[in-house]
Length: 61
Image (cartoon, rainbow, N blue to C red; front, side, top):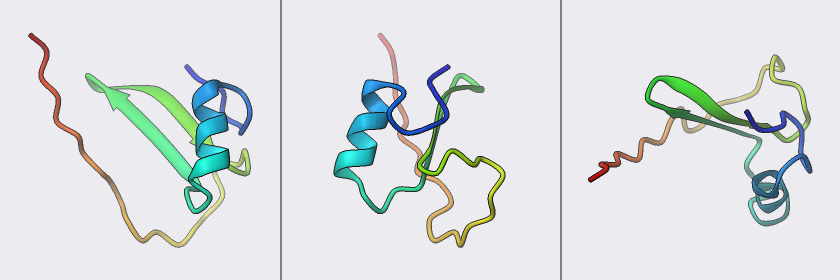
């Protein structure tokens, strides 16, 4: 699984530099969490939530 703090992976760096308003990202694939990003490194911190989830349906050949 990816690093939980900014700067740990290439994806972390892109989110940190280009998506300044994004505080958290969690990606699940086939029911398993495969990537997590927390801008402040605090997964248990409470935050005001404006958008609960985004779903991107994908199919594989």
